[in-house]
Image (cartoon, rainbow, N blue to C red; front, side, top):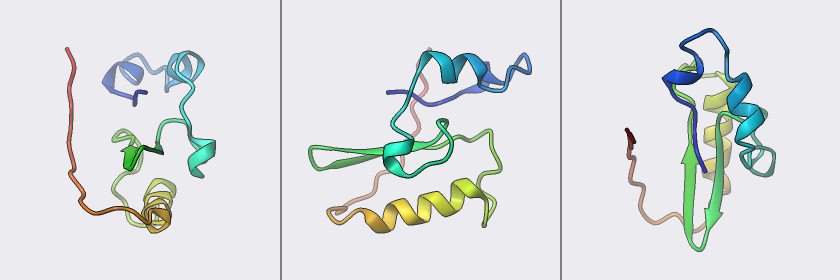
Length: 87
């Protein structure tokens, strides 16, 4: 599982290759865009966000999706926001 980064927007490609190579569980999580998604895996709810979209603009599609997604999670005990950069 992956999420987008600066290499997908650097040449103006706008996630075309990313979408073709890395199908993410966006539709299963209710997302209308494959660049942000979530998935529950054995008691852990993983959320991937696209920092290159209109985030964190309140009212944006990604923001509204995140609010709805978090409301659907019934087992969330602890939220640990993390940012991992793999080089």
